[in-house]
Length: 327
Ligand code: PBG
Ligand code: ZN
Image 1 (cartoon, rainbow, N blue to C red):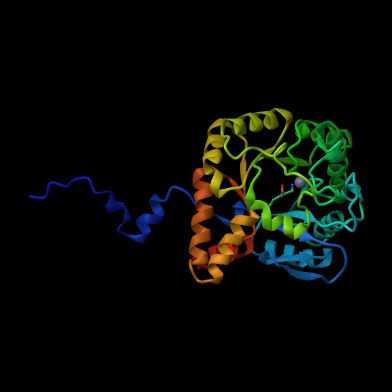
Image 2 (cartoon, protein in one colour):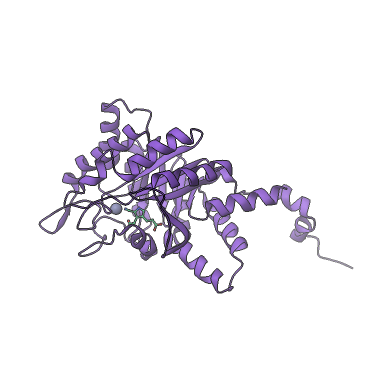
């Protein structure tokens, strides 16, 4: 006699049933696509550290933004490489720099797209740090007014949402106040709330020339050993008025995503960062993995952990793959 009466496999024995009982889903609506904009015109150059990603002048950024919108991707996040660096990072808040130009152009040419910007100093400062340096230290409070100038300049260009990635204390409150004070109360803030000092950012720093010129980022980005501290960072940013909070990197920090999901009611975004992308690309180039399956599985894991939104360099590919799957 067969005594086995509990058979979980029954729910897996038909593809339609598997669809019905599936608990989580990755959709194109979850994706934000990062764009790297540079000075000039007609520039579309592959970034060596990020195969398949490009340095784009504003006109070319518009083309890619159109492609993203046509695939159903709701948003892009714009990162910039400026024409000059100085000690203060003043090119970050000039209205004629690449980020501002690209935001204006995308808003004009791709009106259906939601446009976000990364707010930070490290691409713009000669020190390569995310804040103002005084006596060899990154000065928290001296950085806040500089970040406010950057945020306002992005808002003037037409950014719908700004995403500060600097990890200074009190920046969400300072930016909210600055935006509201200039009539930008509709401009939302996505806070890089729990951003870890991570080796996974290597290819990005190569791509935007933002590696610190002395020391490291460990006095402002979080220690990767800490989980409870992430909850503190998130609670502060929620309290200061963040609209969305972000955890970064993604895959090695899914425990943090889960903890954030349980502790916080705001939408949660994860950043599937450059090192995660570069590892996939390197393994795929050697045909060690099935890129498509691996990427879809990884992003779904981010959703399962509790993320609502994913910033990913794979966004265009994923949108195409999901479309094929529907057909
Ligand atoms: C800048 C910034 C970084 C990333 C996003 N914004 C790098 C850093 O903090 O050193 C990383 C993104 C990625 O690795 O894809 N503050
Ligand atoms: Zn930075």
